[in-house]
Every structure is written in structure tokens, then in C-alpha cells.
Image (cartoon, rainbow, N blue to C red):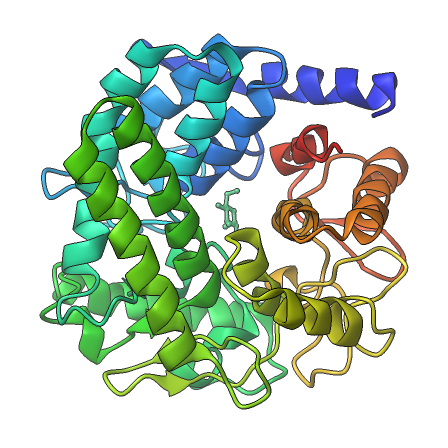
Length: 397
Ligand code: GLC
């Protein structure tokens, strides 16, 4: 990685660091996102693990401090309220009442690899245990082995076309309209008291592919962590849960074309929308080598699909919902590139992975650390001084 870029990563991670009530965390963007977010903090810990392992640990410890008594970890902690909350994602109070993709066990395990500090695993295990238990129980009440989300924002991909149909939206619609529909859903979340198994599932109940793929990888990490701590029964339990989710993904998500699609409702109706989510199972090692080959050759590197000047667009160009500059509806995000990069490496596609790493570095060098980028021109869009670009530090052979 070019030394100048590496030092820019360190600089932004230091500039965005905050301390509150003895907790140290990183804001994704000081202007637009001045709080702590769940999956962002996992990204941050992974980035920080490359040059400041103590800060990486502090970031995750801080995230766990606001865990709910039922085990849920909220997607936002408003450490210093009042700056920019234009929407209250919860019941009022100091956190949102939604969650986000469960990347934290993976992040804890990655941080542990740096200095093998067993006390870090011991200290965080309880929070992790309750969080994954919450997801396995409350978010899968009928034991179908797929974890449900109750709001698009829980996917981390707020306005992804995967959720259009459920929000009653056409393929092309203004950003504000999408936002208003998600606000209406938050009102329903509130009326349901954010109760996933009993109430919210009647309004929005999606089994999302990336969320479940990240869960699979999280359960693998849980199994390894439990094993390290001598908790053999837990280790076996988490490993069994992992296998069950993989089987359920094959049974309920795989379409006739071999791709994995998110589902909605009680009857697991497939949401036939192609987005970058089709690659998420590679991150968790779920698909076979043959399936991975199809994903890479027929989709990822296809000009009509995901091959653009600045890859990887979040939605393929030939999709009627594609829009080059509308957040999760086409632009390139470096967090997504990181998931895809790691999936490619896992299956031995080192050269394609290298192209994604180079493209990501180029975006940062040409347009700076932005939230997302136009996949044709590389123009930086959305929030500025955004941390996710730091993940290039974790894209190494
Ligand atoms: C946006 C992104 C979400 C992220 C948050 C903070 O809402 O869609 O994934 O967690 O910003 O960066």
C-alpha cells in the first residue's frame, strides 16, 4: 500500500476519534455521522488493528457498553446527542432501537490475532454471546435458521433496491421518497415497540443475504473464540448454528439461476433483485468453487453487470433500479469492495481481488475519503472525511 495513503488512513482514524464517558470510539464522518455505529465500529476495529491495537479494542468495548438487556446491540449510540439526529431511530434515549449486520465477533477475532490478548476475548465474550443468542432467538423465532431484519437500515444499506417492493416504491424514485417510507416504517417499529418476533414481522421481515452471510462468518468466529476460552460446548453450538444457516440459505434463498436472493415474509418469497449482495456468500465461504466461478465470470467481471471504471457498483448497470450517484443504488462503496475482496481471496481469485484493491486505492487518491463514489467517473459523493476508505489497509495479499 502506498505509504502516503497508509498515513492518510491513520490520520483520518485519529481525527475522527472521540472520547465520551471514558469510552473511545470513532465517528464515521464528523459532519454527517457524528455518532457511533455498529458495523462501522467493526470496520474501524479492523482498520485500527493494523496500527493501534489498543484503539481497536477500545472501539469494540465502547460498542458493547450500550447493549440492551435482551442482548441486542444498537446500530447507533448517540454519545453527544443533538448535533445531527434528524430522525430518532428508537424509543428515544441514548441509542437507536435497531441493530446492524453482526460483524462484531469477526472483528473481535481479527483484533485478537494481532496480540493474542486472551483477556480481550474473556472481557468481550459475554456481550458477544448474548448478541448472537438474541439474533438466533428473537430474529428467528420459528427456528428456520435465517436471521430477520425489521427495517432496511438494519441491513446497513438504507435505500438498497432490495427493499423497494416492500416499501411500495418503483425502480426509480427520489431519495427523499425512499427516506419518508423508511420513516413510516420506523413509526410502525415504534408502535410495535421494536418487537421483532411478535409484531414487526407483519410489517417488514426480510432475511437479507449479506446480513446472514455476515452472521455465518460471525458464528464461525464465535466458535473459534469459545474454543480458545475452553468453552467446548459453546464452540460446538455456534458451529452447528453456522451450518444450519448455510443449509437454510441454500434451501430458501438460492434461486434457479444459482444466485442467492434475500427473502421476505413468512413464506420466504424471494426478492429477485440483483445487487452486490450476490457476492456476500463468498465472504463467508458459503458457495462452492463452481458457484464462485460463475459469480466472478458471469457477474463481477462482466461489462454489462459489475465491471465499471471504478468497481464494484452496488447494483449492476443493467438493472432498472441502477443509478450512478444514489447511495446504495449503484455507487461504489469501499466497505462493499472489502467484503468482495476478501471473498475473492478466499476462493483464490487473487488477481481479480488485486484489481479491486487497486481500484479502491485509486478512488481514495483521486477523490479522497468519501462515503461512496460514482462507479463511472470516480466522483466522491455523500459524507466527507468518511472512514470506510481505511479498509484498503486490510486489502493485502
Ligand atoms: C449510512 C450507511 C450505513 C452506515 C451509516 C454510518 O447510513 O448506509 O451503512 O452505518 O451511514 O456510516
